Image (cartoon, rainbow, N blue to C red):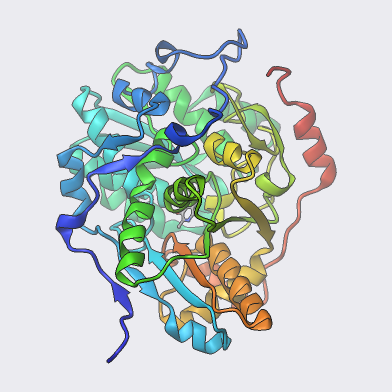
Length: 452
Ligand SMILES: *Cc1c(COP(=O)(O)O)cnc(C)c1O
């Protein structure tokens, strides 16, 4: 009998609901606060920038949230996503461990991000919104929002972090193919952007700055709302379709993961795979859950758990999260999607409750892992996803030393076809393991708001 490589679900098994971990935690995550009053914010505070359906999902205490049929219809363009057993990688490593990965690179944009851009576009359209203003780091979120906007007839304007805008011209072309407008951030179109450019005309930009610009545009126009591709509760919620599918597929494989691994930028693909497994852990299962982040922007392993702004311009509500400080400028790296100063409040909360582990790796060791993976399995991982690959390989090698046949499941959050310059730089020996300056981190943390 030949053993299966791919575990595929038929379209009729596409999940009908997203899972909300908040419903199962004994201690709820601390609420977002109004920066002016220090009091918890209400729906009215968010109404200028988000549609009501999204705000309701942000604060819901329901365990299951139904996926609207028009969203499931779009999901079926690429979902259910495959679960793959990495047998060739296991062999190359000589490990007794069994390695499975959930592959989110099959979406039109090449990552997990359309899992949330599609419902966000749907809810905005339903409430009569005409335009979406948003930010993007490496361009994954911008292209995912552009794709969703094109399906639901919304105009999309994307502020793209300058360093990535220069590094990844084809991501911009992809956004334009879907009909979106892409602007390098900081830009001179907003107060927030101009303030940064005055101080530093050569600013590399950051997600925090790009968020300020997009929020400013959304707040100043009635026909425009804002969309965020990570961090917030509703985004983590939408991504749980990954874990819900993976659980059914692991069952098809007659396997249970001992370890679940995902990379963490803002925390959404991690939440998507891990939260359903954390639900089972709360009921007595003992799966280790590991988030892997870049050593150049180590929010979970080096940040403070404190209330902070979501953006550099200090326009957003305060959220309690692991943060490096809203004004912290992470050094440039090729994993643009992991260069955010904070972590999803839900993921941060889960970390504080001791329900997950976190570790940090430098980018060259992640690229080495990604190349090893590509040569065994064929798929070229996104630089962000390479952190999860490195985490999985390290665990598999530990299993080899310890002679243990553990089962490892990781999230391959996207492919790297738009990131080949990073691979070229890696092969040329040009990639540096940039570390931040402790003084910069201390200065950013000293600016944390004094609340909570
Ligand atoms: C954006 C992105 C990430 C990081 O974002 P999370 O919200 O932490 O998931 C990871 N992988 C890929 C491929 C991405 O595009």
